[in-house]
Image 1 (cartoon, rainbow, N blue to C red):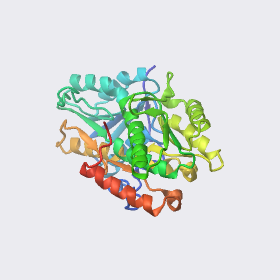
Image 2: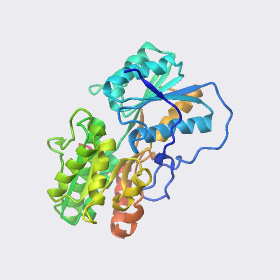
Image 3: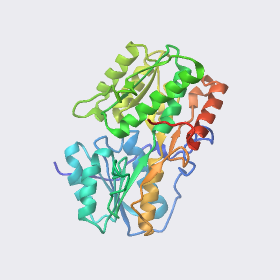
Image 4: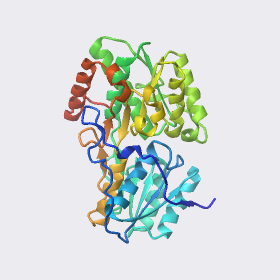
Length: 365
């Protein structure tokens, strides 16, 4: 089907709020945009993945970076929302045809379409969220000069989230599941499981992780044709994990992950669920009472900075990697759960964060 170009979206963009400075603080640069700037002819555009711009997670946070650029840099904007994977190439082409100066694509699955368009249109700048073009054998960046990858080391805050989950579990079992087995999903799940293992090591405990095996590098996924747009599927998987005893969940499935929040909300306090990509207590405020914390990615800031660099003619193809050290990845505040997280655990999380930044703790194999 033909791409549908969206007008201005009225979104509750959770990635733009700045929580209080703490162990779990989100990036300080996520301030509200200024009210007025000088208008520009520069046009920044965006293509979503099939989750859509109102997914309260991944695409929505990236879109906040585009709206921030409009407000603070005065750029023009356009965007197109993908409904299925088959839309990606033609939606990117729609933005090329619209004479966009920079096109930001959102999601690992847009990697091939973005690369092809960048090679075909060397005068247009491209940036892609959650994909890179690093050769796994040589470690070299193979992206053309006009294409920048925006990646996030989510294993780091996910490790902290796993430690937190293990400390809060009453059943001795926590769970995780993903939409599909792609690297940007499994990085959360693996980091989470390693954080639980670290808790067990430090505390001489045996909290089990359901849904991910670090040795096999495999786990539980929704699967199917639209795993990130299957809320009933997410709820079914979450229900299965809680039936096996998991009481703290980590869904990594975009909009489908709301199924885990629904299960937690209906559990009468027996189950809680973390959130990913953005602070769930902001983007999924109705579920805040069951969200101990969230594993966030500052996609809004990464997108904004890529657009700013392109507009200022300082754009390069150097890979951006968001980490705990540069606030590109973070563990969100505890919000309603602040009193339930012990002072000892908070201090331990502070130390874990420092050790991850220092390289003393490794969050990947």
